[in-house]
Length: 339
Image (cartoon, rainbow, N blue to C red):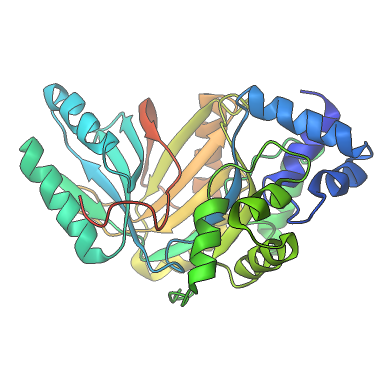
């Protein structure tokens, strides 16, 4: 990957232009031609570094319910559970991690009751009782944005943390209310949540599919971005192929009265892509969760230590992924109503 490709990747993770000629705008930004920008991004897609190019949505704004689930699963039941979760559209991620709580998966459903129904079905069909749901009570950060700029160094990060600057952390602590969507907005969401067409003018292709004017597609997509239904429009990366081969789920035991302050500090670390407050369990005392990415496992361990030193939180655990069983993007308004 050369410097121009790194520049493009930094730009399009959060801000792929919603415009008639997006690659012309990206070329202007990177100092290359429209054709060169298109060719380079197509190459990154073909190599699998870019997993998907499209909209990333806030499930809460769409009226959906989401949760993280943890299970204590005997080894001889893991394949049975994995096969079942693979068939459920609302299960987007499923990992085995190195802990007694060894299976972790995300679940998105039309409602809390729909999610509970799915979980009860999972427990019944597998015979597993130790599967628990840990929905986020606070969201401090959702920003899977990998930095390919070697000029961004450790000093920059420490200055950001110490000065209290927010940076690009996508903080969402406020209550999020569902947005009343029109039928046209739902129709557009169904099509832009997938992969953008392989075309220099992808929104024109989408407009043709919808039989809409391209200006209407662009205006409505930008509106969804403005009202925060689309959290970001851009590239979803396969972080391992992009060079960030290590990740850990760092979990922290924090005094509930300090959780808000500590969560905000943790969210400012650029290596942290997600930061949530979640409930505890009788044998799970950790209430703050951070997803940490690095180029090596040692990088992740060092970040955990830095977070501990910065926040003063001493009781924590690192859960590394042993196996990735499922990783997909949620398809809203297309999934089955119930499992």
